[in-house]
Amino acid sequence: MQWHSKNKSAPLSIRKTSVASILLADADLASRLAIKSLLMKAGYAVDSAATTSEAIGKLDRNQYQLVLADLRKESDEAGSGVLAYARQKDFRPATALINSDLCELLPETNGNAGTLTEDDSAQGMVRISDDNVSYLLGRVAELIGSRADRRMRLALRQAS
Image 1 (cartoon, rainbow, N blue to C red):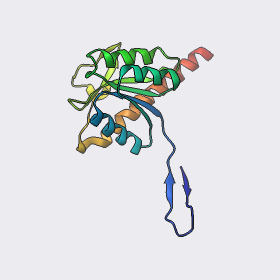
Image 2: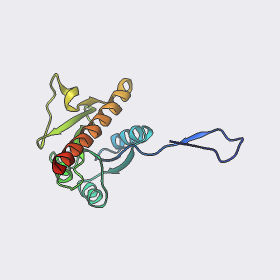
Image 3: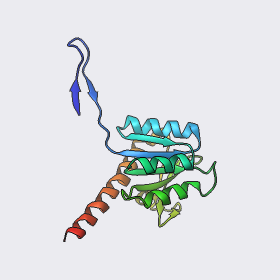
Image 4: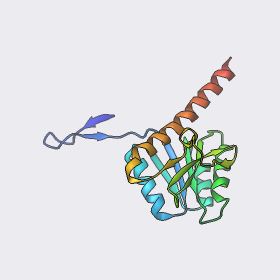
């Protein structure tokens, strides 16, 4: 982070640099805007898409560390389809389904949405509500961190 001030009488402000880039694909405008706002306030660079074709276009033009998708208003399979497409990209982002109707973040495991179990927190499920925004942001950071760890391990294996 860099501190800067335009003039000496102005208060100091922090110039945020993004921690990671996230693609948020959600057909529900209110959910998309709320989640995007939370992630941006946390310092993430967030692109958003309202449709499958828009999400795929952004995946073709940009690289992301995390792709979150809930496009069930478009079709039941749309979100999973976007995540499957994302996993085929060279940059291999972390992926998770969002169920914004139930306000949950579900991990994508082996191409299928995770089921809600006791160990959901270990698998990436997050309930989005006013009282646990910090937990949501923590789980997003964990998903991105897990991706980085997988990429580092792969690079080490390939180097040896």
